[in-house]
Length: 310
Ligand code: GLN
Image 1 (cartoon, helix red, strand yellow):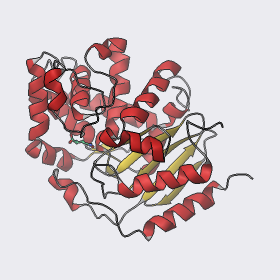
Image 2 (image 1 turned 45 degrees about the vertical axis):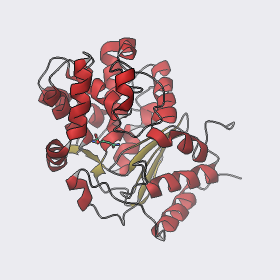
Image 3 (image 1 turned 90 degrees about the horizontal axis):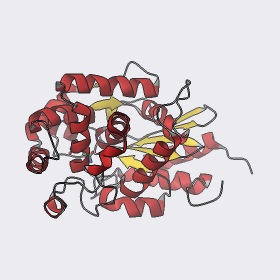
C-alpha cells in the first residue's frame, strides 16, 4: 500500500491538538518562559523535494540545541577530525547541562551535543575572531542550508540567556582550566548563545536538514560535507541527540534526531526525509513532549526507521 503522507501528517496534527499533557516550557531562559505551549508544528521534506506541513509549521521558534548540529558541521569543516581530540563521541547518560563528567575526563566533554561539547565546538568556530564574525558565519551557513535568507537571530533570547547562563559560564571556564576552551569564556558564550537563539520555523528547519538525508549533498547542487561525515553526524544524533533520553528516543522513534529546549526536534531518515517538529512543552530531559510523540507516531505509520529495511 502506498504511503499517504499528507493524510498521516493531518492525522498526527489533529491528534496532537487534542493532547492535554504537553509538558513544561523551559523557564531557565526567561524569554522562553513566555512562549505559548499550545502550539505544534511539523514539516517533512522528502528526498524527491516534496514539502509537507501541518499545524504551526511556519511559526518561528528558538532552535536552541538543534543549532549544535549545524555548529558541529561547520567545526568539522574547519579542523576536520582533529576536533575529536577535544570532544568525545559517547552518549553522556547525563543532563544536557551537566558538569560532573568533566573533572574525571580532563575537560573533554563526552559528545558535541551536550552543552559542554557544544561550547568546545563554539570555541573552535570562534577561531580567534570576534563573536560577531562567528555568529555571522553561522547565520549565513544556516541560511544557505535552508535556502532562505529571511532566517534571523532573536536578540532578546540571546540577551536573556546571557543574563542567566551561569551554568554554561561555569562549564566554559572549567574547560578553559584544562585548555580545552581557548578563548575567554564570555566570547565563546557570546557566540554560543546567539547560535542557540537562531529562530526558524519547522519548514525552514526541515529544509536546513536536507544535507543530512542526502549523504552530505546540498539539494541546490554541490556538497555541504562528505558522505562519511554526514553518516557520522547522523550517528551522533541517534546516540547523543536527546541527552540522557537518547536511548529512549532511539527505542521509540528509531531515527537520528536532535532536540532543543525551544521545543524543536530535527529528525533525519537517511535517503528519505528530513523532518522538523516543534511544540514548546518539554519532558524531564528537556526534549519536546509532543514533538517526540509526533515522531513516534510518524515512524510507526510510515515504517521509517534506521533499524528496518527500506
Ligand atoms: N541554550 C541552551 C543552553 O545552553 C541550549 C540547551 C538545549 O537546547 N538543550 O542551556
